[in-house]
Image (cartoon, rainbow, N blue to C red; front, side):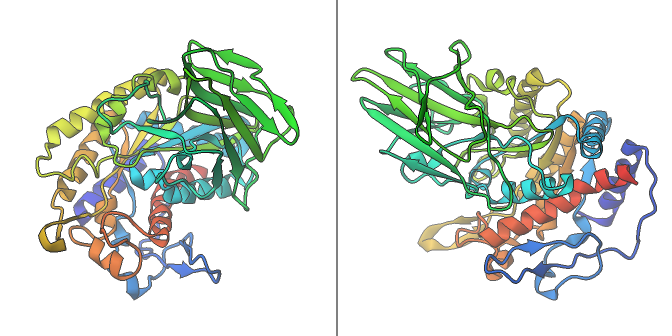
Amino acid sequence: MGGRRKLICIILTLCALNVFAQTDETADSVALVMEADTSAVWVLPELFSSYDSTFSFIRFNDDTLCWGRDSMTLVRFYEKWGRVNRTRKGNVHIMHIGGSHVQAGTMSHRIRKHVLAEYGGEPADRGLIFPYSAANACNNPRDYKITRSDVFSLIRNVYQQYPSPLGMSGISVYCTQSVQSIKFTMNEPDYDFATDTLVLFGRSNGHYIDPVLKYDTIWRFPDEADLENERYYFYPGRPLQEFTFYFPCGAADTFFVNGLWLKNGKPGVTFTSIGVNGAAVPSYLRCKNFVRDLKAFPPDLVIFGIGVNDAFGNDFDSMVFKNNYLQLIARIREANPDCAFIFLSNNDTWKRGKKGRYSVNKTGPEVSDVMHRLANLTGGACWDQFEVMGGLGSMAKWQAKGLAQKDRVHFTVNGYNLIGDLFWHAFVQPLKTLQQ
């Protein structure tokens, strides 16, 4: 992003917020610090001062949100977020939607931890989680652990056909002809995500099947069953960090698990993530029950990170891409007409060609342009990840520093944490401005 575009972004941000704050013009770069622990997590100081020359390819000056026109829905989101933080009353729901970058959970959880720290460390609902690793070769976020009794079958929204409709999670696991179980263990040492209300999204084919919840030595049938909307409600009466669901399927039965919502009744900010490996925007448009599920827990803000798979082939059409996004946005607005949107441009990616040689995927700038246009069309904002990380070809430099994997599409854990930190820095600035 050039200096002109950056200046426009700043002006639009200040105008949209109707706040004119004093800025530090010397604050034009970011200091990166590696913590002493073995996880090598990257952290951003609150004020810009200097940056490590090791990462000079990152364009820290572009680490800002570029606001679209008529951004009042986004302004209202920041006002609500600030009010909840200040009064400790009410809830805000932020949802991150994407493909494999989001399913991995590292970037999303990094942002989640920043959000919780901003609130004061007291977590509200953990929100939607999915038992990815109940199926074979399906990676799971690290902040909760899944233990299965046997292998479950898998449906993803990238498939052209599947035996059961999908909902907002875009993914399902299912079992047949036996009593199988999935154990959930919350695995985040810094925050207590214990839940006292569990909402299981699922359905049975064949005979009616009640999923059964077990915790400690207690076995519990659903306290409520909304069969029309395919939801089962459990109220264990005390907070749980570990619990197991059993699915007693007979010979002609199948039970599909589409996700689990964890509630604790506390005020604060809920940060949920929806990610499916290989998903593109049309993948979510194929989810028949997307809107129905979303209406149960409508988001105040959606952070879009879908686009890498849309733009990875040789026939990328920016108009089709934009129109698909507008269809998905319209569906989200069915659940919440006042939902705000932030669009993340694609990271720089490479393609593997003949003889294992890699070449730069040149669609990055085109996708970035679409994301800026979508921000204008929807009254949202764009975080230009492509420009921030260094632009065309920059993924090779991230890989050389141990921040990206060999495929030059995905990041390492350190890379995802750094991307999460960079996004957070841009994301939180309007909130800080409102609080001045």
